[in-house]
Length: 434
Image (cartoon, rainbow, N blue to C red; front, side, top):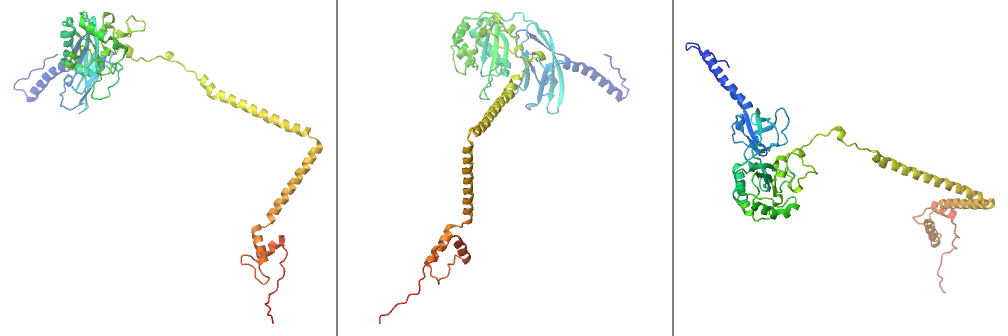
């Protein structure tokens, strides 16, 4: 880097200002390079690493506003993280966390973290170098457990995590005091568990702690105590309390004893990131829980996609109904054809004389029916004529016709019904006896 030129004390103010700016620029350039490419993290195989992502990484200051910053980590020049690295954002800490366990024989990698300030929408980028190193003394014996009342971000608190490790260092597994560490950490929901019914309850954490020391007698007895619960996938809270329950309850940990396992070196967490096939020698009860390649979705090729044939559906929906309809049409046609032939055959077998008689009778019947219908049309209503006739019998010749009848109506009724006239009755005179 070239050294900026010096100005004489008698030179102008502009010269001195340019000199100061050049010196400041020479300091800012390597500082900016450090923030973009100078962050490095050393991680060990079979050991959980935790990398916090804070506003200070981007030279930002937290102003106490929740959800002020958001982060998006991924592999450098890639859209997502590798399958063994997971990211979670903690609202409580207002910090993002990268965590995971490097698989065996994995090389170094670079992560790109993009930060967004939601107040002014300023975006900054950082590159983190992950140096994967082999652990000198990897764990050969592991204890797998599930804590029901905590979330994953709760285990990022070193004080809470040390309290859990101290239960084993000081009480249950004193032989592991020198090299006890966490070999696996994952959310129970990510491993297939259900969300709790109450939102304020923890989702559950599945973790493993490992050491090179053999299992203690207390751990073996504890496993024998909870072994009858292994037939259950998960136990409800407070379903079973063991003899060592008080050690965990006093420290604030509620364990699911159905998931308590002692895992030996044959199924160590060194292999937990690779799928275990059905022919593996590891038993089902000792298979490690993982978020590795078995949970990674891979895009199938076109040749692997099964092809579905719709011939059977076509036959069932179209051909069978058409066949049934054709059969029904044929049956109806045959029935109608044979019935027509039967009528003609019956007419041929009937004698001619009987047919003439039948025709005459049928003709006479039709004639009578036509006459009856004509008579019914010509005759007026019977009640009107009967009323007029009855009144003509009772009234005298001098009386006038009733108001309800007219001479025309009387003429029409008498045309079809003419009763005998009533006898003449003269006026009656009383005689006096002289």
